[in-house]
Length: 249
Image (cartoon, rainbow, N blue to C red; front, side):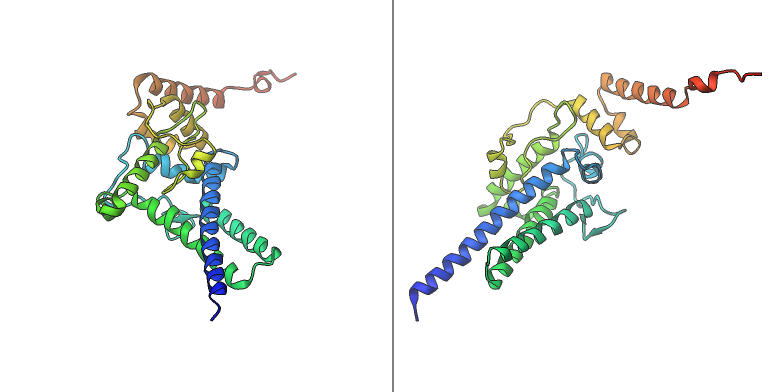
């Protein structure tokens, strides 16, 4: 048996797995950031249901049962199409790139399975459990510190609104090295930006779903929301110049 060939094979396996994990983290970071950018409104609105309706700033971050944002729309399990469709495109691109580069089929399959497995674990299983009360991982000696730290950083993500209503911090889930690379990491909570929160609700067009939420706003922001609603209604019913003209006899 050629030991050098075994070591080379093991090295290739390790490189394939580690490289695929890093690629998954990078793609997940990019997709998550895209959802919060507003560049594709359908993706952003679907994702913001989770942030503004179910685990919003006025709601508990932890519940006995996970509140699923996909109950009334197409999904696979509790993963919405805003995640699935871009992920399919990314997987297809990765498979094609490895094939063009001449990577052998076993390594392509290993990379493909790692991409699917890591993304499912991080962005579905682990993410959802961060919103559950008493999840077993937080009580585990070896994993507890890491899980609690990652969960705290994810809580900061849910509470970070900039002036234009975008959530712009901590796009990772379990690991945040992409946030470090792209300088979007926040280690501490900042004073809550109510103006940014109101802008986020308006841009996502979730005002009607959040009628009760508005009643909890601090006074000055609640009045701004109500004034903007009234202004919109007045504009909608305001007669146009053409309609005010008298017909010519």
